[in-house]
Length: 178
Length: 227
Image 1 (cartoon, rainbow over the protein chains, first blue to last red):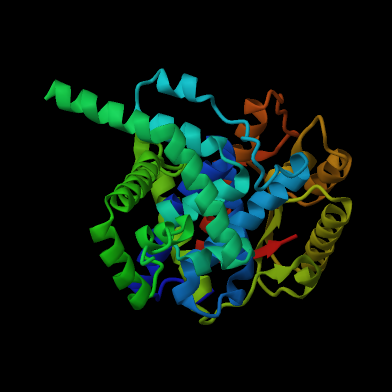
Image 2 (tube, rainbow over the protein chains, first blue to last red):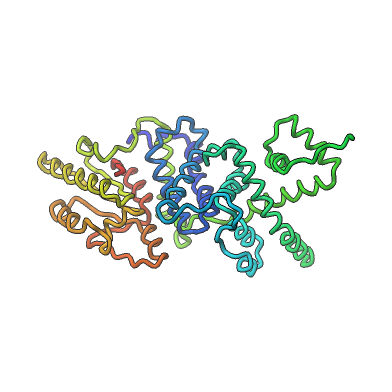
């Protein structure tokens, strides 16, 4: 097992930096804190198992995200029929009403993201939370770039319709408090 | 008719996400500057993007750093993971984790076998290889240690209510005291959250997570084998 400790601080820092982003992605995709923990653990264990497949260390982040996406796919395959990836019917998340009771914009936004179909919230999370390019998202999720763009359009349109007014209200409240 | 066609939603998104090439980006900047409605739409998209990013910024893994001891075990395990993963990713002096079928050829004296599936062929193969390895080591007078770490559906083999291998595991443990069973507490917590009462077989130890246990052992020089 030589070699484990003799690594550049830069690479260590890059790997360490991935644990929390992976958790945020997993949380936004599966909508369950405990399951997100499990998925991240499984993804990192698979990464250990398959490290030789990563030819380019620069691709570490997108490689881990792709493994995470496959872990989620496998989970849904195991526990229930695969959630529709990209249908108009909203997914079963926390209702916006319940979230808005907390009067917190973050909770409301998460509730609305959770209502998106799985394929749309995967794309939104990868683009908005982690800043991946459309091409990278296509590689991670194994879908054409056109699909990435169309899912993103539908997701953003749905979020815009549900959140823009709410965001404006929140801003007005903040202004009135000041 | 000199009116330009409306900018598509895909184009607006690509602009906000920085996905346009230089020529398209320049053209969009000009359009946005001249079209108030388009400017408002782009602003809304930017706002949505910022709101989404901010909404998830405060989320952290529940088990990565317990508040009671932020710099304690979880921190150590986290750092260990960094070292180990980084080690694997550096491709230097490290091999892929061995398949369980290779177990008898392993010269190391401390071996961790990770069972993440309850599939019969996986578990049968893992237990058979472990037993063969322990028997050979004893016959050769080698002092060895073996840990079987289970998580995910692999946990089923260590649960009193679900294990189809309880007697076999008990017999193995009786014959080979240098064999230890470790259950993943994270998997157990998930089962409990879903309303399942988790009872482990006698003598099964618990680790905070399978990942933490694997990383800890790899740092101590154990060989990791995924069943």
